[in-house]
Image 1 (cartoon, rainbow, N blue to C red):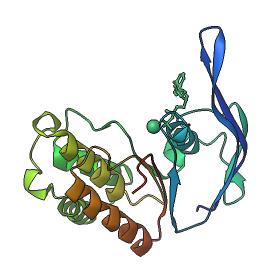
Image 2 (cartoon, rainbow, N blue to C red):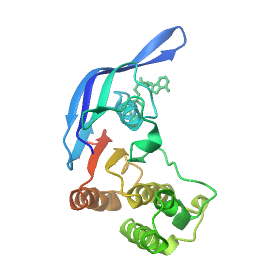
Image 3 (cartoon, helix red, strand yellow):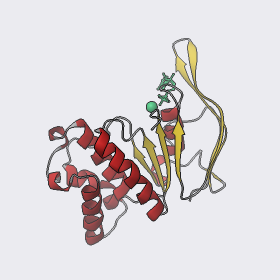
Image 4 (cartoon, rainbow, N blue to C red):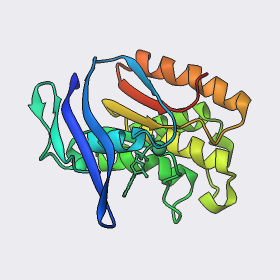
Length: 199
Ligand code: ADP
Ligand code: MG
């Protein structure tokens, strides 16, 4: 996993009696173990593209392959994809630690490995000292950092980042921008980061 090929991909959403063309004949190859960035203005289809790769949205036309294997019928949970959403998607009833431990637990790792991985990623995003806090006690930027820690802790092969830094203060955003690239390169992850931010 995963040399990703996207062929003639289109997505049209129904919108009243009309249709919205969110993706129109996209052809793209995503090389393994590289940090890819897609830049485009709001509304150009970035989120739709990531959600289609993850399996959260069904394409209208076209094909996505991971290592030459068509994944169209592969459910989300079998794609080994980590997703950091544009809008925070964390479990409101779990504290910071348990949110981050969720993926590792699903993967069935032993408790020592889970503990190490969770601690490492919470330290990375600067939330280790808030590990007992509930999500509603966190600021927007902290929730976004928690989303990042949660996605990274499961050590996905493919990391999809949907404007992950846009809710953060400039300073921490810049720090994490470099850290993300380093994590991806050090851990042989493939990342696709979409943003409208030209920086
Ligand atoms: P971006 O992430 O680049 O801002 P999106 O993928 O969110 O773009 O949206 C692309 C286009 O598809 C926009 O015109 C948006 O309004 C439309 N769209 C996105 N999601 C839906 C949906 N669930 N139903 C209808 N239209 C949608
Ligand atoms: Mg978007």
